[in-house]
Length: 407
Image (cartoon, rainbow, N blue to C red; front, side, top):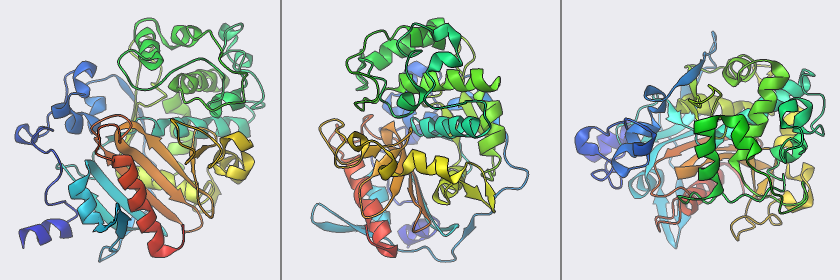
């Protein structure tokens, strides 16, 4: 009866690795960035990053979009490795902190692990990259950025002569700068080196430190958060405003956010950590996904023009080498990539905002379906530890889609 009661309130009965993740200490929050990725601090820190890091605030909408809930949760099942599981099984098998399913603007199911609640601001990790891209597209719409074919130096002359400064904005958006850059989340990869320079000398110096191309720009996908940092600098220069200020006014409030969001700031220069430092509630991540599912529209108003949303998310609008089935990433051709947005395979357009350790917003425009998933995976990729978080999450998504239509 206790288990049934917990599940009825959206709280899983038993989550994986609770003891290792700090349950007995109330899921403590790290005191600094060095502690964040220690297991006992992951849960607490991923829902409180702005409590111990400098950050700026994006105010909520004065008229938030309503998120009504079904009286009875929809039951979802999925197949994984020969067995059938439910959403409740999933929460007991994987280190998800929250799963919220929204269909036609209504919450049809939600679950939480590790004493997390919907009012907590959850770390986006790389889901923030798509938010930066939305800001870039809005600046394009307003004429503050004249063309995505402009090189970054057009708006940031300090980058003239540098690799990234000479790269076209569209290729930065597509993760196709051609820079030689390895981002595998090991202790000494190029990402770690870039972030070390950023924290000590500022984002501009970190961007300038990338100097070697392995490919001509525009030809090959190579995921690198440094490219999002360049986009943030370009957006700030083109608009004359911070990301919190510009995106807060142009994107966050118009999507109908119900709570404030925050963006972590780089201590060396006070610039937003664009590649992954955004924090918001799961309900507001759902509202963001709903806007994108409606091709940029909220309550009859275009937050971002539909054509720009399609440029970001439609596989047919990407070069062939960036479409699902053709684009190679870590030995797989499963996903494609649009403009700072992952594109999923299937019979129709589906896309996702993804972040390491299991963060995701899945969007199916045709079904008006949004799935928000936050997590504290055992490793950055979600699968390297053998827990298969990414693979089982994909199976869950397919099961949710199957409830309403065909993959």
